[in-house]
Image 1 (cartoon, rainbow, N blue to C red):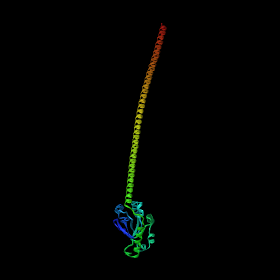
Image 2 (spheres, one colour; image 1 turned 90 degrees about the horizontal axis):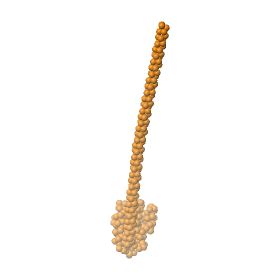
Image 3 (cartoon, rainbow, N blue to C red; image 1 turned 120 degrees about the vertical axis):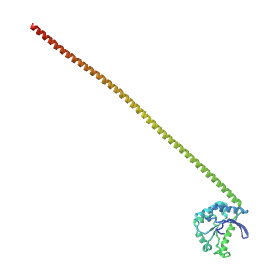
Image 4 (tube, rainbow, N blue to C red; image 1 turned 90 degrees about the vertical axis):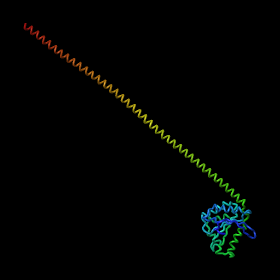
Length: 296
């Protein structure tokens, strides 16, 4: 069991002379591999086990448990479904000498995320001894592998292909509903965008219409004002023209009256002169008469 496993495989293991199908998962926590291909490999392997799977070993290297690894473990748990939770065993590899000899040292290195994962699978975990430190047959090697075998034999029941297929159908249905929900949400979102665009277009059209109407009313008002001003000027011109004509008529009448006065004055002057002339002539005539009578 090693986290560098690249292919998911099922093996038969005898524990107390009882054969068990054991699924060894590939490097599920390997950041260089995609999760989907790994899950597909696990699914194919489980479907090959007609009598079900006793244990599903998730092998990972000892080290810092990252958020990416946490997400990967959660994905495999969700992929297999809740029925497989009781069949999962976490196997840690590449442990150093102290971690392999003392499990508490191994546990002290776990962060809270990994502790939660282990608790979620019923605290089933074991250590795969490093053969370079603990060769096969060495006591610690046998003890640690024995612990893993005990975990396997302690599991009640098997994870069947029917359970796996049911889980896959449920997940497919969930994905279908999710896709439908997403499509519906997208459709509603698109419709909302279209409706918003339509309303915005209507508002823009209304704004343009109002602007055109205001411009038309402004131009119409300006035309009316010009017409009114033109009529006012025309009436003013007519009034001024009539006033001019009346003024000219008054002046003409005044000239005629003045001319009449001057004519009358000339006539008076002429009459006075004539009267004076006549008086002089009369006086002269009388004087001649008197002189004549005196001479006689």
